[in-house]
Image 1 (cartoon, rainbow, N blue to C red):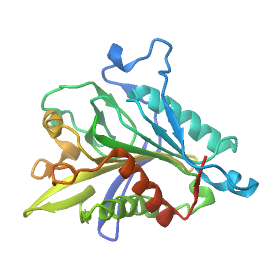
Image 2 (image 1 turned 135 degrees about the vertical axis):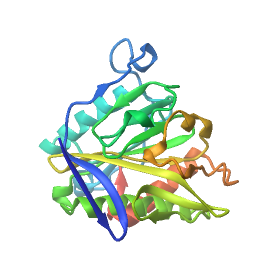
Image 3 (image 1 turned 60 degrees about the vertical axis):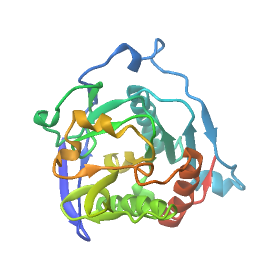
Image 4 (image 1 turned 90 degrees about the vertical axis):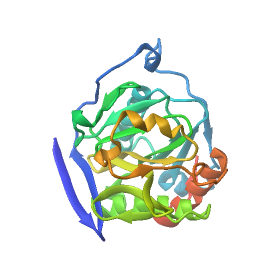
Length: 266
């Protein structure tokens, strides 16, 4: 595994270029389906209008039910393999997970304060983070060879995607030098509202972003989020903004097109 670290316009990030196989630290029964691949309700947005659009457009996938983490990783890896070989289209997958903690490549055992939920070790960049109900996860699978083979620019674009999405709801999201993710100034206190962690395989990206819409923020108390103890976490709900997942998804889709320059089709 090779860890790539750097800065881009004062935005600090960590990401993995060469990946290992993901292994769970804990794999409880409720995180495994009996068949090994839990059913997921999928909504595909829009339809291709031409053969060219079908070949080049980004496919949007929205899961209406919670997706077990290992099932999501398995599905992402299959999609990434297909993108690499030209048999699958690029995809953005919007979903929610059951409550879990995931450990990035920079995670430290000392940042586990209380293992309240299953912990999974994954090769994405970053440290410990939480995923759970009320948090919109966006897994982004793009072929950078056909876009811009620049990892720093890709991470910067993910940040910009989140910032513009938040702007749709009157929230000023900002980068912070030396810190991963997107932050808001909540009455003079810096609080994290969105996280970023990515992996690449043959220049195809996966994993991605998570945005706190209305999660139970007390679930973060079991870890030191992203290894930063002196700052808090927040959500749109905690900031007094009531918004549905459908509204979040619509904003994510429209701002994605602004940033990545692709129409979204099934």
